[in-house]
Length: 115
Length: 276
Image (cartoon, rainbow over all chains, first blue to last red; front, top):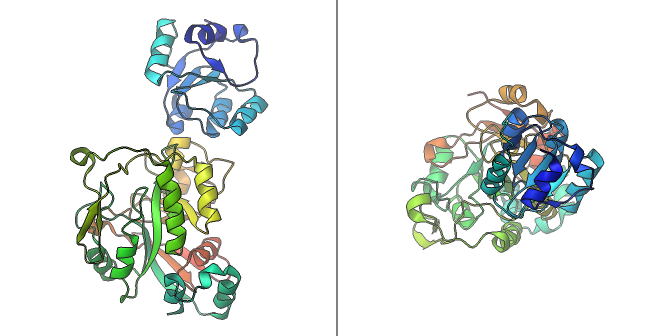
């Protein structure tokens, strides 16, 4: 499943620069709001679902080479976070849904590898 | 005694930082301050009922502590009561708060004057979610006087994140003349290191706090991401037996400016953490 399909199926808003998301195939997923856990547990090239919108999500995503970060419950990163993500080539996506719903939809779509 | 004058605002010097600095320069001799800068009162729902001003003061004195900060969760209504209870004791009480930011990171916010704290509290109040405290679940939140007598209940839930980002909080507290020290970075919850993994690069800290459960050497080893940032240790006391007094400062006055100097080991000021 491509990142483009995920964006379409979940109705995600793309906060960062548009890329050819149909060429990006996430390896799995991870959900946590404790960044220390994400660093330890998220699969490389996976998608990370969180409601944290702090600058450090970009650093963690870059560290793990994540396909995308899905920011839930309508939390919005500051503009400087978005520009930093663009600098680092990180994709930030936003959902109004809570993490539980987002993860449930990803699971239904077949993204079941938890790293 | 100059120290107490400065803290208690009788000279008004705190409004004129440049005068205060001169005063500090004049006073060359330093005093030793045995400190615990993270103490809760009965205003914090998780604190024991014994955490009332006279008992906090008495316990601090018994433990040889002469510098404390009162840091309730997102609140400060009991600070002045503890200061009054300590008025005739050789104990300085810094006005403070333990803020919970949007990222669920706990920050010690320490000030010199009641005016600075009041200005900060007003900003926090404006961004504290309007939720009712569930006493059964979280515990009582009491505002008391200097003898520990009940004045009122705080009805707003205090155990909650205030809608300030970490960076905004540091910016505003610093602008008001206070200092921000991220709390208990070795804990697995409500900690800068646990919640944000790496140290944020958009703010800098003059010190980080470790809990009673570790030592500076162990914390530097476990958390290489904190680099060389000075570490202080506090009790995070929710009960009287948790007052710690393991961080020792050498200061001319017990003030935020002097703490800053000590954390930098500047101007002869210094600090160290006593091993337990």
